[in-house]
Length: 247
Image 1 (cartoon, rainbow, N blue to C red):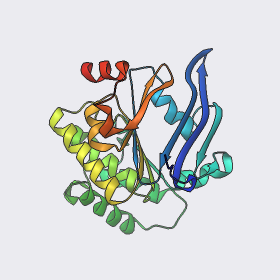
Image 2 (image 1 turned 90 degrees about the vertical axis):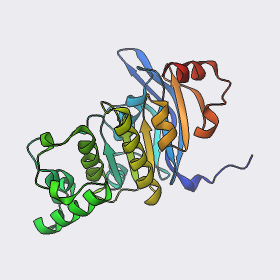
Image 3 (image 1 turned 120 degrees about the horizontal axis):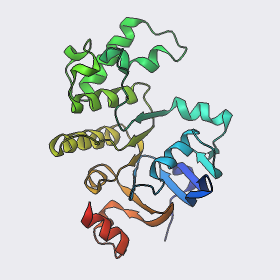
């Protein structure tokens, strides 16, 4: 089978391992996420899904290697990584003391570049439109918004620095089924239109199906199954099939 050239790989892990107090949480994981594709990481709780993101972000130490665009991630290359990176956190993680537009423009106003308040406000309002919200919510506080609206604002904030890489940690947690579908479809539309590489951590196969191109199913810190999302429902892997039926 012909493989995609290495230069097309956005994120790669090589024998990535992580232990907490002697317990192996991720074991020699080899993962490739190709430019412009969306990779879903799925599996039962405690299988290392969120820990994987922490390793990539440098929030915890690990064994093995992680590469970004072919460069090993270290203190020097992480600056390049963070300049091209955005994240939608599980709970949205909006700043309660800041207005909607200030949340969205936070990175623009705090990255050391000279951006005026008007420029930041204009950029935030354009992003609000991009995620399906009216600019009249600009001066509202996060607590005044519904859960779905907060997710949209958090997504707008993640897009503020025009990233080529986005991470999503359980993007629809706490939302009702209708709102979840709406947020999934919004994420899918935006990442495809902007040709953003994305990594989606989720326990929900429906979200993975709506957002992702590829999927890695983890069990006990290991790769249990990997393939295209379209192949997942026809997998012969018993553990994956059991998980899909129970989800």
